[in-house]
Image 1 (cartoon, one colour):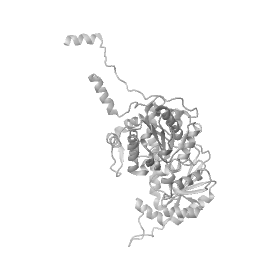
Image 2 (cartoon, one colour):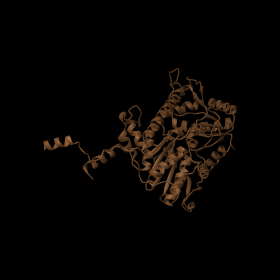
Image 3 (spheres, one colour):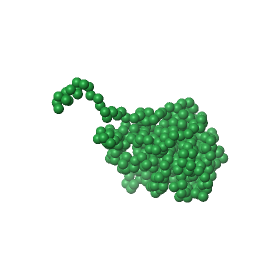
Image 4 (cartoon, one colour):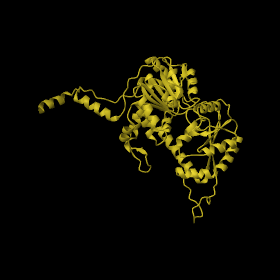
Length: 466
């Protein structure tokens, strides 16, 4: 390699953008795929290890089903789709809709031949991960909820798997660490290296990072080299017809609190505390009021309702007040799956649960009323929970009731601020995808040929100087 070629390779390595990583030419894709889904599947097959940051309702399940099937044909090995609890059967049905035969499994002994298999994340330890030629992580952002041990097990367990797909909605705003997790899982770049290259510590928020001012576009170009992102099908060259969602009607209900309750000695009023600990104390004071209001809202609803809460005491009180069915984290996984499936099928009228238990993956287009009887600072939990109902396939408006106390107004303001940041992040990602030419292959950087022919008058000057 010449010195000029070596230098060019060195400069290219500093951009961080990944070149094609050993994928394959996909076979015929099902005609049922929409144009934007087909574009993502084609990219995933050709690249081999990619992420699909597709907003809720854009068909991530179909993308995973077809990608996994293509990988089975390519490797003649089983392909695994990992899903959140109670989503495995839903994923199997989605596979069938695309003509992909799939089986839900609970342990390694159920794998009989090269095919597509679906399992819950909770069953990971029951499987021999070296068996699979491909893996898809459904709702891949759920890895954060499992903590470092499970995240590490997944990353290490599949580090030799040739074909990988991480499917999730747009990552949470200002949580760029999540993008690093996806990159790490895909073998693109370790998360700590990503942070050191494009980020600095955010001095205003403990443990947070922010993009360097000059690094915004280079960072998103790097993401575009291994991921596809879309908020609407048109972001990937598709048609938006049918994907324009019905109205989301947000209703904020404020409960006035007694500020003399809990005041320190010598003080007339207590000073509200919206830290994690203080917020729980505020919620405990208003459980009864929030339950009464929730019961009234559920009674006035037309059709099924889901009630979201944060605390176990809230869950029990809300279930009693609304005559709803309670889904708890302490329940057996099979019982949780049974209740979630029953609600999806319309067999349960009112479900009371927490966003961290049922806020990922499930499709509840039939449910037009959500009541957030208790709210946290987590925008992702709120966003994911709302999008269980407000998604593709829903034709009627969705009513989202948010119950807060007057002392929790800063929490609701924080969630709304993060919503604006989320929308800005999506715009940045989509713009980067378009800049990368995502309807076809990535644009190649301009490179000047090594052999340079000089004009005659310059050659004479050089000879004369010599």
